[in-house]
Image 1 (cartoon, rainbow, N blue to C red):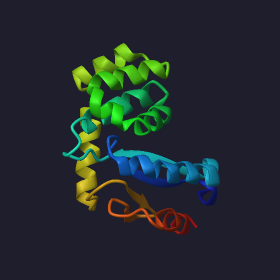
Image 2 (image 1 turned 60 degrees about the vertical axis):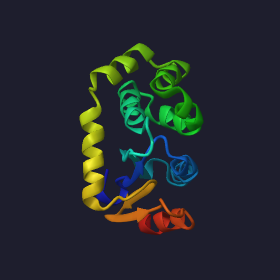
Image 3 (image 1 turned 180 degrees about the vertical axis):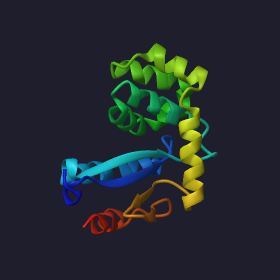
Image 4 (image 1 turned 120 degrees about the vertical axis):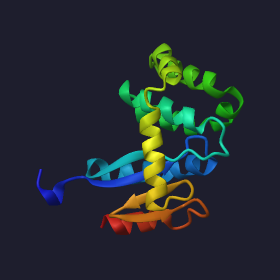
Length: 162
């Protein structure tokens, strides 16, 4: 692959219990549809303290990626955040089973914390680069904050992708 045809990267900084991130998922899908394999959308975790299950949700998503179903799990989770609010970690395991993942292994991953360092590292990096809320994006080295408003955000991402 030549450098000019290499996929461009969009980092999607997300809290998996955040209603605004659920809304932003529409933009993520549109970017995928418009660019296909030419854009690599990378989930980065930025769990917010105000969301009780956000850290566990991020760890569960990491396990879903290990099991080969990361994005389907993330999309399903963001579409059902009210159920996460009510069901907590039990819902995370239940959702894994619904998607055909190994729910027992996901539950074990939550208990043993095998993905906690990944989530903590993302969160620390996010703070270091200036992420203040979610959703936020990093495109072409520029941080775009969508936590206050997502108006025009996808257009700005598109313009940075060229």
